[in-house]
Amino acid sequence: MKAVAYWIEQIGFHRLLLAPALAFLLVVFIYPISFVLIKSFIDPVPTLKHYVHFFKNPAYFKVLLITFKISFTVTMLTLFLGYPTAYLLCRVSDKTRNFLMILVLIPFWTSLLVRNYAWMVFLGREGVLNRILIGLGLIESPIKFLHTTFAVNLGMAHMMLPFMILALFSVMKGIDLGLVKAASSLGANPFQTFWRVYFPLTLPGVAAGCLLVFIFSLGFFITPSLLGGRTDMMISMLIEIQVSELLNWGFASALSVILLVMTLILFYIYNRFLGLDRLWGGAS
Image 1 (cartoon, rainbow, N blue to C red):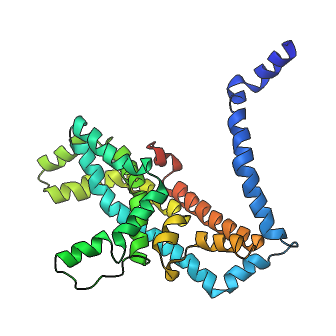
Image 2 (image 1 turned 90 degrees about the vertical axis):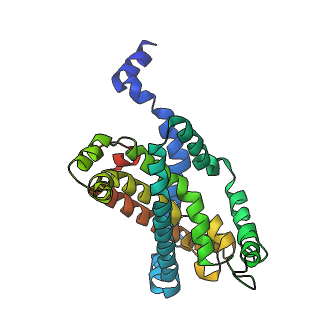
Image 3 (image 1 turned 135 degrees about the vertical axis):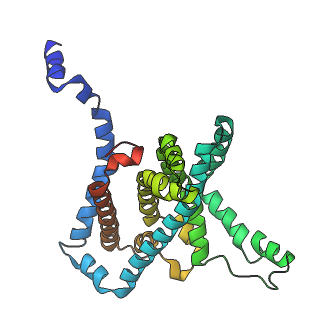
């Protein structure tokens, strides 16, 4: 027992407490990632052909561009919708804020599959949106909303909007409103006060929200599969096809590694200019 106590004292009890978490990460994260990385280079024999095949085939590179395009569009859409929502949350009373926050968090309490099927019902040719437009006399025949890029962007923005709002709200609630009042007292109009004082102070939240939404969007699968068409294939869908239909684990692993590398590059750029502690509201 003395030996065990001495061993614990040497390594530090606080470090020993990290052992379960480190073991969990090793089993469910590090090992699978390592397996995928190795698989991309040795399936069926040691080779780089899977990576060469990806970059030499314009169709696969187009899928990569579509993934970035959709992710960027969703990020901008959530920023456009989330910024005024977060601003409102900071300006209302505590009781109203709690109610509005519940509305923001409701998507987290609903199954992702259920939300996507709801959008399918809403956007279908005989769905709610077409019926409303026809009832108002704005259109004569149903418009194809479902299985389009519009549907993918709309559905993904709905899924990602809470992340953007929470990231912005965490920064906005810490801003000293005395700075805004000072700008007004010095003769700045509301637009100048917002654009030159308030908005720059919210940029860490904007950057954090955009990073979270963009990276999550890169790996989206269910929403583009259900709401998108043939021209909206994202890299996650391509990986699924390689695994479930073609049984090409080597190429699927290479695609996964490429997606992981893109994510790490984004993290590096963010950390280089802002610092990852901005993601949870700390100072860089």
